[in-house]
Image 1 (cartoon, rainbow, N blue to C red):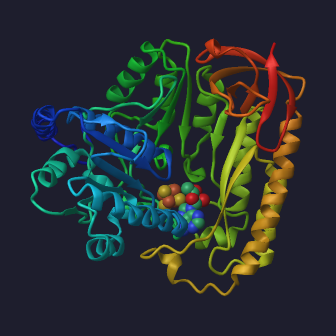
Image 2 (image 1 turned 45 degrees about the horizontal axis):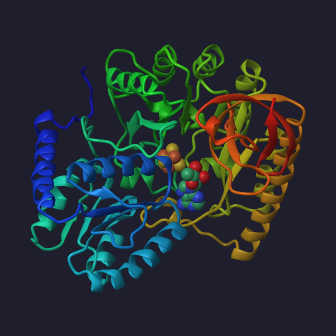
Length: 470
Ligand code: 5AD
Ligand code: SF4
């Protein structure tokens, strides 16, 4: 397929497989299989990347461990979206120094979005000398090669030069679940929202080929996966770099035509290019779950403009109307940022009123966190931390009330749910998810895990529904 973004030649990917085989042979000489632990921070894209890292580590002869205790290899897959996430990583990476003192042959790797930030790489180089390998998201496919360099004791390796990225196919994957699977459909972001670090660390938008994605979904369906989430920083940009007229609605429709008893989800959708065509496909395709995550970020048009979001408050509300006209019961979730530089309390009131107008099922709420290198980090930011926190608390309170009201409306209904795991408290031995991805607690036999069941909703909280088998 012709395209405008680069693809890693199959030969180069095959070479990585050879490095894996070499390392597997070396590891096979050890008395017991060595252990590797992969710790993941941040978004679903990172979860999906960690499944590739685990796949490569298995190919290198490692057994995957559930903890860093006693691990021969530790990989920290990091997130740079907010300061708080970075501080947690630095804290946890710092603590690894003790284990490494006891086991100097341990190999510690740090990858993901933080690795791609120049000031982070510098800090790791200077003060976190127990970290052996640092590489950015665009180098993930070269992990075996980079890891081998460290393994053969050629010192520390930093592979963090800026990179637009390319598409690499054919890497081994080790999926974490047997019911739910991630399928990356594209990488990178070209939107440059003024607060966001992602376009700087994850490179330019590039799409995987539709045939490869569809055959991956076919295979997952054949193996009995019940819940498949298509992933991309902005799935609505899918196909812009491909010839042949592919776009996200067409891909979703083609995926929905694959036989099998599964549901399709996707994230994330930028509102500016969530089209009526997409809503039509969602409405018309039984396999597409009636749920969409549509981050609005702010309810004030001036703030949206300063954020470089390229839609207005009214345009966002119009999209929601168009969506609900087609799927009245659609589950709608969103992201919002409080305290963007220069946001006044009046402008924040517009965010509150948008929440009241839309009534999201759930909201991910964030206080603005300045990210070095982004335009917003240079904008005047006169509001105090206390004012931002007070607004944030009002926002959370408002949404919690709405979430509870929305959940109450489920009581008495029967929902077809996927029973997806064991419960954690006395009120429920099982957990399940509605088609709209609402969490349901219920009692039942563990043999039901992995099956669809009709559940009557009997009670709720702000965060979850409670029910019984109908
Ligand atoms: N500060 C606070 N929140 C942010 N997000 C992205 N960048 C920042 C930042 N600098 C939020 C947005 C995005 C979600 C994944 O994280 O709401 O949709
Ligand atoms: Fe960040 Fe905006 Fe791209 Fe989302 S669309 S990853 S918020 S720049």
